[in-house]
Figure 1 (cartoon, rainbow, N blue to C red):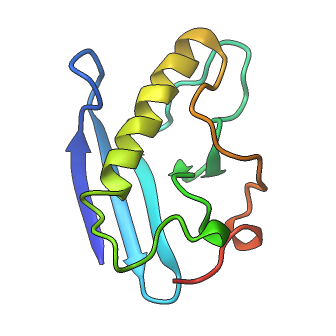
Figure 2 (figure 1 turned 90 degrees about the vertical axis):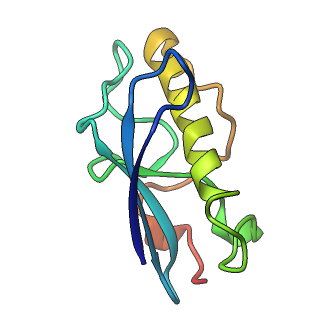
Figure 3 (figure 1 turned 180 degrees about the vertical axis):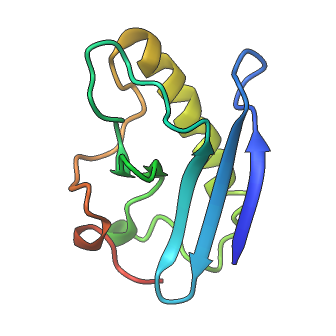
Length: 116
């Protein structure tokens, strides 16, 4: 399943186009497809808290902790989580400090994920 939609995390935010890609056995992946590339905070060379900087694939949950599974509605989980990530991203662009929480992980998603 592929789903593309434009979101605006806050009334003051810019618009972002998200791509949700779900394939049985691979779990769900969420990408920011526009704008691309996303702006970086001053002095930073990579996006924070992503599984892929080049693909702009967001880290919204940690698969090994069973925070999301295919029985959960994406409109109540992944999409709001992506909007929250984008809100923290906008703060990061302005401050250079990631306040969105999460755990440190490898960028290579194959080293972090289990299948759904």
